[in-house]
Amino acid sequence: MVHNFRVIRTDLAPDALPLDDSSFQVDEAQVEVVGSLSEFPAGETQQLSVELASDSYVLICNVPTHYQAGMSTAFTVE
Ligand SMILES: [Cu+2]
Image (cartoon, rainbow, N blue to C red; front, side, top):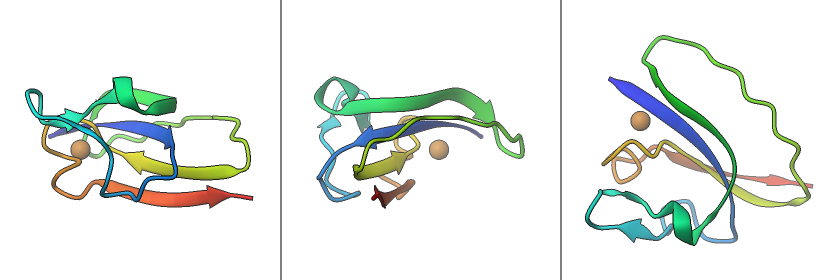
């Protein structure tokens, strides 16, 4: 199964991002994506460098249905 990776700057809870009900994904037009990786296969390692301002962020996988399945976590940059 492939996954992707999005870094989203938001004050929303990690399970409260806006959804696009037709594509079963987080609606990226309604959030601020500040970093991302395209889909890549399970077991593969990729690296992403992003300069982040002090704020709240949520990491998600936005392959259809994956966010709803719990692929998200929040973190804060201080
Ligand atoms: Cu995924």
